[in-house]
Amino acid sequence: MSAALKEPRVARMELHRKLAFLLEMHSYKIAYGGRASLKSTSFASSLLTLGINQSLRILCLREVQKSLADSVHLLLQDQIKKLGYGSLYNVTENSIKGHLGTMFRFTGLSDQTAESMKSFEGFDVFWFEEAQAITRRSFQIALPTLFRTAGAEAWVSFNPDMDTDEVWERFVVNTPPGAIVQEMNWRDAASVGWMSAENERLRQYDLKHSKDDYDNIWEGKPRAVVAGAIYAREVVEMMTEKRFRPIPYDPRLPVHRIWDLGWNDLMTVIMVQKPHPSTLNVINYVEDSHITYASLLSVMDNLGYAWGTDWMPHDAEQHDPKSGTNARKLLTAHGRKVQIIPKSDPEARIRAARMMWPRVYIDNSKRDTPTDRPDRLLGAAHLVERLKRYKRTIPRSTMEPAAPAHDIASHGADAWGGLAEIVDRIRNEGDVSDAKILPFSNPDPSMGLLG
Image (tube, rainbow, N blue to C red; front, side, top):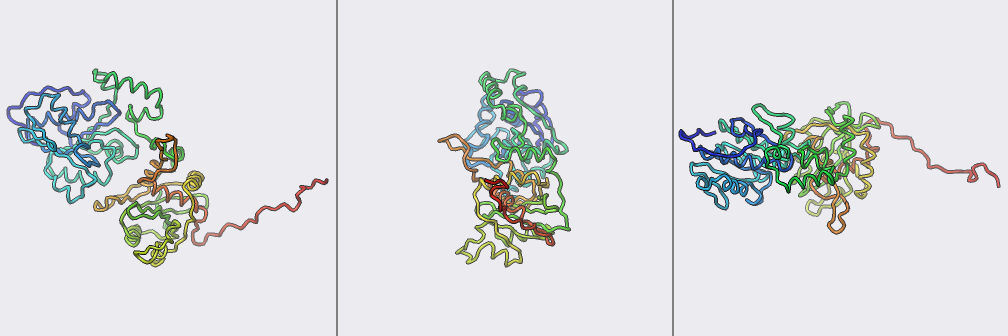
């Protein structure tokens, strides 16, 4: 960070003692926790205070920022007034600049590429706000740019959502060297009199009426699944039974693929091996958008697997007037053995999946992907992320759960349901088909009783 001036201004600000490290020098400064814990306001006031005695370039980041209203611009503006820094900062509709050269800029990470992030080289601080929504890909392109500057710092503030979110795994579970990680919650605010009476009444209400969500909202504990997840019980049981763990590729067995098709929507492929008729190992998963079948097949061929059967949904046989062919013919032309999953409805797939869950083991890996493919995810752990977030819509007219939501989680979940419907039809080369059993018939309707 930039050197301080020889005659610093004296500033007075209130900062909880647990967050005193914000005024120290550390490569990573992370604060997480529940509602009303004053994380964001403390980050804002600390950065503003540091910026009145030295020239700092600060980039405020969120995953998605469609307009400046989605940023922390207003929060910083409010803190400038509260701290009495009005004479030290010039606030406009789209920027904040300090009289000594400090400047705050704002952007969304989802709109950035590795190339465009280079325009932010030389910044002293990246503040990742609402970081629970920031993706693995976004951290991968942002952090290398930041740390090209000597003494730069990453400030990270968030309310935990899922225990497999990138920010939780990257900073809380696998804390990097040079990081200070601090949990904050409502108790910390209350201990110094900063908890408003309105927030305390809301907390008490949620404690009584929203018990399932209370620990996440107020205590800052991450969820295992999203609220209302369709497969909530199945995911928790899988974790408890340690069936989500490293599952290596077995070169003695073929890898079968189960597809859900898309172009603007995500195209997803689940990769499985069947070491026993009653056991299914999910060893990998890929999803991407705006990608051809040939390109996605090439991505998977680089994994070095021996392929078995490709199972595709019924729409793989639909004729595409633009290409003059269909998905099944395209894969067959690439030498793949293709089978079609019969058409069914979402509820049938969900029922089949519930029956399949107890026999499934899923690899817990996430693999790095090219930063120029922002929609690509590789690794079976990403499939579990989608299944954790697969939930039903709740129409306002009824406020009752209805059909499964069509969102970013549903494409992987649709492939999962398709897998469940054909899991017993998956065969390795040399497997003996199940013996055919004739349907039951009763030649003696009287069951041996006369009369």
